[in-house]
Length: 195
Image 1 (cartoon, rainbow, N blue to C red):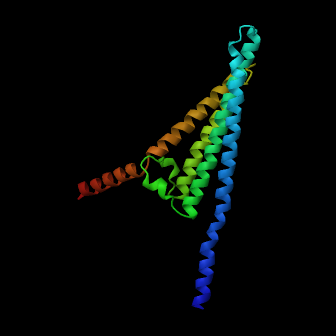
Image 2: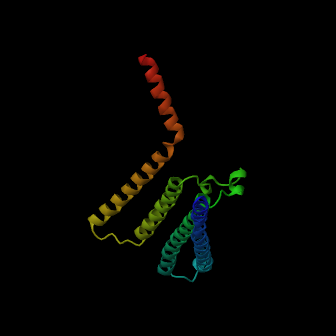
């Protein structure tokens, strides 16, 4: 019976390696998005080179300017999405397979790539996804035609909601273990004063 339990628990524990499919898949998806965004940058620079052409009409220059700004926002969006895939891939590997020794032992490594729990992975992904949504809204706002006063009100409301989301994200980030430790010390001090 002990042998059967040992075999079952061993196979159950080793089943976590199925996560490698998600790790490798996410990594390749991130590389593909990095590649596409970089190709977009190359074409963007080639098109923007014509901006200084003295024979270009003002309307054509304005159209080139607007399309260039829109494409830059799309490129930023692509790089952010690729970053999400990279963080997701590294986070899954660290949570289910093994710690990445180079990430923990190297002082130069980014702390955003060191994932210690599922909540940690979720919060890091949420921050990058919020940035993607902000960039997407900015892209839509660039192409938005304000025809009525209510359109301007909608745009202002969207900007206010973005500001609120950034404020809540920032305040949640700073209410970390240090502030919880300060709260615990304050509570202990209050209990000492009561006695």
